[in-house]
Image (cartoon, rainbow, N blue to C red; front, side):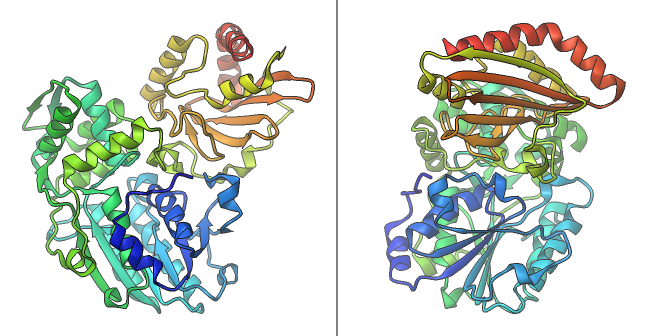
Length: 493
């Protein structure tokens, strides 16, 4: 894992003199959790990662050996025996906004209630909750849910510290990636009125500063703070400043009428966001998100960076291939919300298979090519056909190809890889197993495996669903012949 070496020096010093603690992180797989984890480990803390599926915790083996991993789904009936008693602090990072457009608020409330049950009999002293700024009288469903979770957590038997954040800007954040997609792909934008809504964005680096700064700090117990950057901007101004920094000529035309549903489709087709996330985001974008206080900045001595500075630093990370985490790797960016563990064993019966193999001259180079597949590199053969398939998938409500990949040459189990999800990434045993999150009438796997005789086995497996699944496979056979054949030849060449 890359270390977030940009934290303010005085915050690092503050943490280094504090006692080492046993810290629990819920939602470790998320964008914030993945960035927070290495910082806590580098400070010498013992970390317990709570995830729904330990097989998709996207960290390297060295980091896995440093942490404890516990599987808990906070929507299920609580089993407090799963958690150890000696916990000092917990970070509560559970959000459900992208999983549903109707009942995510209920899910978030249930998760918070169950969390309180889990930690009731532990020695926990503090819980740190990252929420949203909720200073308006009329709140969106998303922001109301954040406030409701805050009130639920205040009922727990611990000291709560709430950090209410505005839009988070950083490499890999959903907000940054949406702005990036819009500006890079649309020289002319026809936008709804919500682009004139004011907001107060904050850099991911400052969010982490605040999250580390309140850790074990008794002055912050049972307090709720607004955290934000120094600039109050409209969404339109945010887009224009991005375009200016990137040297992009862009025209934004605002129309008086565009329904929330139409706005959501606009975001969904142009950006890499899911439709459910787009719909909930549009609902929130109509509400101003402005901070009311700067008490925490003064208490911790932190001066948040400007919006333009946060953009510049995000691109430094991108250009250096040091994007620590991306929202696209979370399960909310894909189709399947269930435990992917059940898909790891590729079925043998009732399936169609396309199997190819080739003798390798250099297995090391071939393995590197396999580990670099997808994203900007592409699929080595017939990339235009992959792109067409991605466009059709987007039209059918799928994820398309826009998620790409977080790292150019590293893959972890659980990562998103274009319209695939990584199930197994075992470079030591030379095996990569992918599961399709595209819209297909069935279930699909793609596997690469190099055996002890330096033979590369490439296997596409499809388990059809009904007659339409079978017709789909037969219709795709000509394309599979050229695409899969060309792909294995290029990997081996």
